[in-house]
Length: 118
Image (cartoon, rainbow, N blue to C red; front, side, top):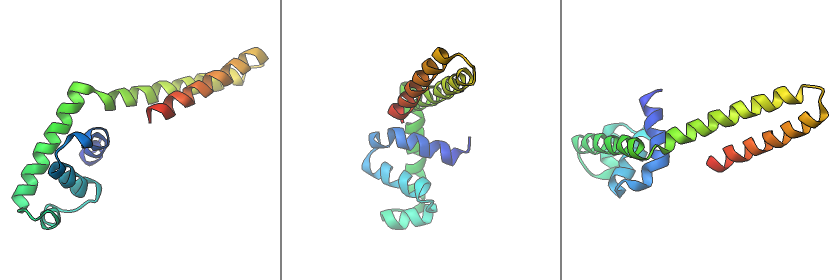
């Protein structure tokens, strides 16, 4: 996965755990696609200061994921829900009416599981 996307996703999960300055730096640099110089100008600090702040913040985001694993769990739930949907669709294509009704219930549960995790 592209590092920019990975950091943005981790930021979505753990961004509120960062300090306000870290939060602002990551948001501007990764989410708003500002350069280090542009971020420095907005934040009123040096370009090197932004770089250091971003690097420390990235390390913290990775550490939170390593300890808490929320993003990994989110991905696992999404994959499982996708597999459940595929199996339910396969059952729906059968001619067994009772199985089709059961598959519809299973698919509804998978949808609910995925949307509650999102």
